[in-house]
Image 1 (cartoon, rainbow, N blue to C red):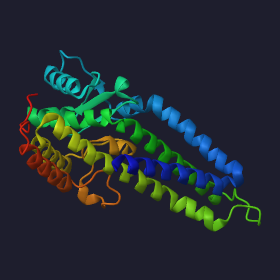
Image 2 (tube, rainbow, N blue to C red):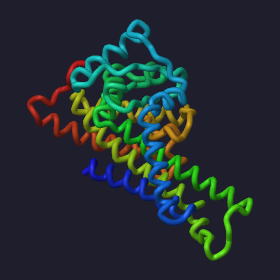
Image 3 (cartoon, one colour):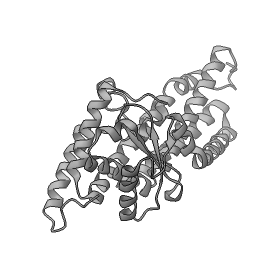
Image 4 (cartoon, helix red, strand yellow):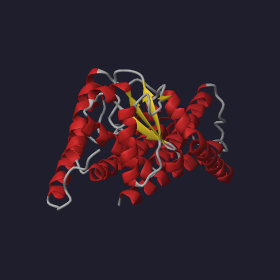
Length: 293
């Protein structure tokens, strides 16, 4: 069901971009422009999204000698998940957060803030790393990059329309674009794109939580980590480009500043509840004990 929802949401974003191009430029040529623009931007995000995301947060690569504890956890969990060892990055600062990026498991990276490494005990840090490895395994990193790129293209087109309206760039005769359609494009399209992109992010977070809990055998550790991380985010929000917020394991901005519709993540309470329900399910199985990390 999650895979179907993911495909449907990406399809909606692409259709929205094509519709905007059709409205702004007009005719089949406009629709074709939207399709070509989406293809070009998706290709760019496929190749460069990891470097852009890492640079946006000032992430620095670390060696096994510089972060032996983190490397040990990542190696064991990646091996358990059947994944290649991803590159490991650390982000300076006290804010506690993490994300994964990369177009596929062979070109993946995990970035952890210094704050999260200092804050979490080992079992909880393992839960966070397993969550990020689950995103890599499911190729959510590429999905999010594509969604962010299309949403960015929609916002860019809308901004161009806004400038053109302001400076009188569009003809108001009967052959020109409908003024009402243009206003809808300027004001509603970016909002719709953002809502679709964030809905996509929330869908993938639940799936990654469940897979991470199964990978470690310890759902409660991840649940505890999420609660700690949310408290930390209230005190020290993580600064960075908001376009990359859906990549993070927890909302970079305290949740009370966001409505549910415009949140990049499900509520921490909902995530914790699902993890504890999964813990009860796993505990009923003969193999339902926490695995060593």
